[in-house]
Figure 1: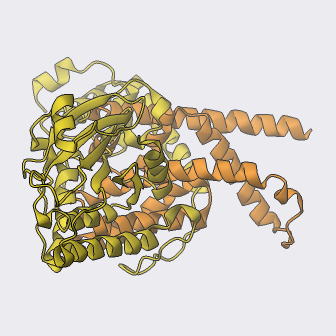
Figure 2: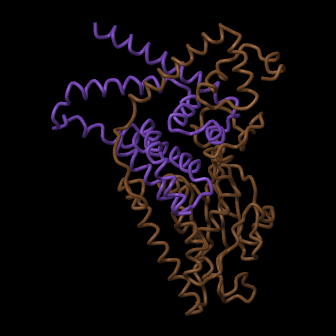
Amino acid sequence: MSPEARKIMPHVDEGLLHTYLDGELEGVERDQVLAHLGECAACRNRLEEERALVARAGELLARAAPPNRERPAFPSVKRSHAPGWRVPAAWAATVTIAFVAGWYAQGQRLATELASSAIRIATEAPAPVTQAPATGPAKTKRAAPSQRSDEPRPQAPPAAAPRSEEAARQFAADAAAPAAAAGVAVPHDDVAAWPALDADGAHALLGRAPVALPGVAVRRMARSPAGDGVVLVEQEWKPGIVVRLYERRAINLERADAPQPSSGRARLAPSANAALRQDNQARYINSLRVEIAGPLAADSLARLLDLVE
Amino acid sequence: MADDLAEVFRSTYQSLVRFLYRKVWDPDRAEDLAQEAFARALVHRPTNPRGWLFIVAANMARDDARRAARERRHLTLLKSEPQPTAPPSDEAMHAQDERSRVRAALEQLTPRDREVLLLWDADLSYDEIAAQTGLARAAVGTTLARARRRLVEAHESGGKKDHAARR
């Protein structure tokens, strides 16, 4: 025990006592607390009180535990049949539509394609979403780093939330599997790096103003660096929940100045797959193809999609 | 990655069910949601599956609670008929009563305190809770101390109220 550790430690606050009792106190701080407890009877008494409190709270929570059932086998996780999770059927339907559309566009060289702006809404869930929205002011996206130089614990990965970059990477990874199977190009989905775009630029790319969730401020607009005419509209749907809309212009293959190559329609397939694999819902709205996806329940996404205009 | 997820499934499934149960208060629903979360993880392949699972589970539980509230409104009239099940045993009644009291006490906590307490009880570390909630790691202990105290106090005062009401 260093002499400093003895000197600087005032009475131990209850937060530190609980941290100690939970086995989460480490390094110098732990030494300091132990040193102080060794000398301060008042804090030792409080430690025992807090220990009883921790035990009592744990006991109460145990009374509100679910019945201890056997864990199902992995990965034969069964799908719930509750109304909110009709995901597999939606996947199958839209995957089929996307592949048929891609095959049709390549094989038949359709003179005029139906408007097919693809809008993908990827909903991110950064750190604060585990809390109810009403809990207080918006928090920083990243957890504040530990004040101490603790060694990282093996069971404690540094970042728990799927943040924007990670979500984008997952999205790209999701896109890769079906795309490889279908033999089509994968759109670049590292959206954090997409060049910014203003309203006029978006209008020029889409041939119309981009659609969005009404009454929700647009945080950012960007365009796909792949030159495929995809416009990203980012909106903060709720505090801490960023909604992404990917919009694509209608393809008109008859026009010489059409912004898409003839394979453009086919290239929608992997996007559609990628979005589908995130439990998406898709529909046509005013000649735009609208897709929604994200780590929210399918019915929430569907409700969000209803709002887009 | 599938192996990683299988390992996470082994180590985390029960905790996730416990976490979800304290949100939806229906064991079948909690298991369905936990399995749904893992099914999604299989698709998404998150780099940090544990944190991802709890975030997704919390979102699903919230949506589920909203939908349940909606369905309750629609089913109020239908539910007026008594259920034709056998009366529960005294023991089951007692356990049910205890659970209701703890649930009522948990609902006295602020959403943040409750979330931190439930995450801790679902075996997340302070670092994981900090990452999950946006709290500083140093604030997790303080939050847990407050949450535990309020839980115990709310449970005791609720019990006294029950006692007084029975007399």
